[in-house]
Image (spheres, rainbow, N blue to C red):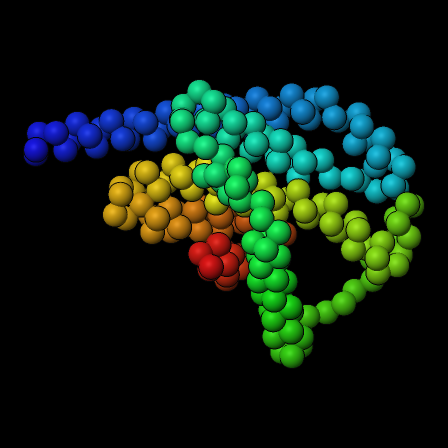
Length: 209
């Protein structure tokens, strides 16, 4: 039994590295191909809008989906339910409940910031096709933040979360996956404008929650 444990650990480590590699190769290739093909389109959109239209949230989303598909297709027999988007998970009640929880978290956080006078409303420059209305600004933010939030969730709470869970073992897998995904999630946001130790710690805490 003792002799089998090191062999099992080595096998698990090799499998984890192989899964990470297949995911990364699929992500990089798909994102690079998408950006080379869609670059002219986003350039035209930027000229029409009068300001840069970000391509990276969409290209990152394409990369994450392709990386996950590569991992599932060539490495795993695990279904897409590992990422919460497989068959049997699209129930209206479940979607409504998740939407209500997410909305409540945002409203409560914004309310606490507003009470503490840490929430400020600032005007933004109007865009050619949405104007300067509140709804136009919300639409502009949605077009950027929706794919950005989706690729982050799929990356950190999807395929990579499953890989980290396997790496942590049967008993400690979920805890290890949550810890590592939260730390990496915070470190990735160090590239944000104005990011520092305090903001990174807050993002890590948000990732844990």
